Length: 143
Ligand SMILES: [Zn+2]
Image 1: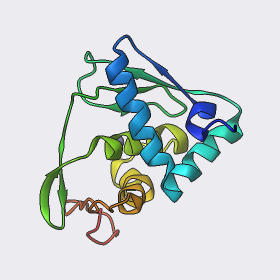
Image 2: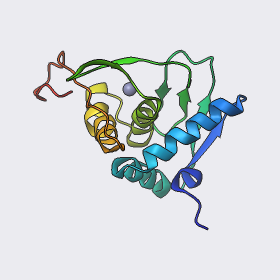
Image 3: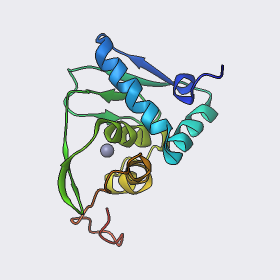
């Protein structure tokens, strides 16, 4: 059987098996979206594995271009949507950081527009797009 794109492109490092399993589950949901799949295929094309370091010691979630990603499954954040503030789902956070790591786009409004919002809207069921009303760029008000 063909291994999943996630298994072929990502290594998950950590000491807490339950937290690492949460990251793997979130990645599967991301892989099920067209944009998430595209990102994993971009990673596959590099011929390198992307490393995700998982742990409670990370305050927030972050990623370097090309990796590693730092993910704390117990850290939650609120985001603003057209429907008001919501708690970001964990799979959404993982999709966001994957976007940074694979595309190298570090500017938040661009990563949200290019990666996070497409992935969020492609989840089943779809999750609301994040709004960025403070964005001063000529990017409309959807970032
Ligand atoms: Zn970000």
